Image (cartoon, rainbow, N blue to C red):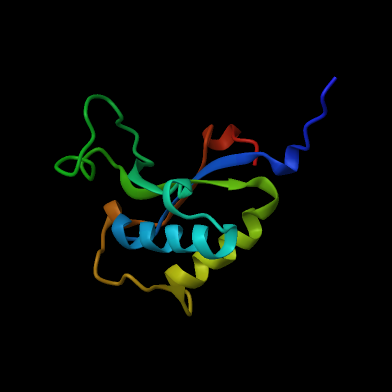
Length: 122
């Protein structure tokens, strides 16, 4: 039998904190600085999450009306979530305020999620 250390498994998460292009830059920089990733090993990509209406196509023309917010999905080793989160927060927030202060409204609300939603096992 092969034992797997559950702490070393990658988990998929997402974060939203304003425009996803700004968030993606911070996520990708944290992947480089904290996790030592580069090039094709960078996992952060943009998308939409958090809405109640996920029927049909969700894109930049309708995501707000479907209740979605802009997010960046990434993978991180379970045992490094805390360290990675600290790097994200310092890059996204200053004195509790988003550094990306231009975009306002529900489409840009803060979000944090796990693959599997509330039943995710991070």
